[in-house]
Image 1 (cartoon, one colour):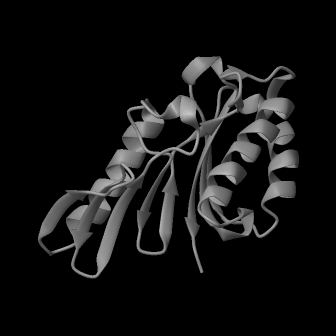
Image 2: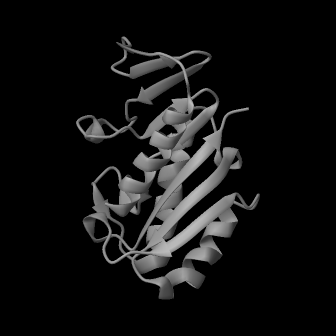
Length: 164
């Protein structure tokens, strides 16, 4: 809940900083597009069939920037959390991010910012050891602990990527 609020606030600040007229249209592939002067905002449909009815987009594109929704350590084929604690969930979370990026012709090297929410701050060292193997370029990052995450997850990560 706190993650969605933070993401919503960040997007709201971005949109409010634009001084141009907004128009909305629906693209043929069920992606909602908003055009603002020289920037186009596209709400991409999920590449995961089981998430087709989710009330959010896996990625929102603004120009060359992609704002990815938070991912947890869920095996997308079974829609259940992987077993094995923080290490296994961290790996699966990062693999889920890789899958969304790949769907948009990017990889982890395109990530410039991440937001990490841990269920228990005591898991920081274990999570961080895995995280840095996936993102050696050291994108900007915020990390904090929250009382409870969706589906009982131990970790959630959202990222911003730039397609170059």
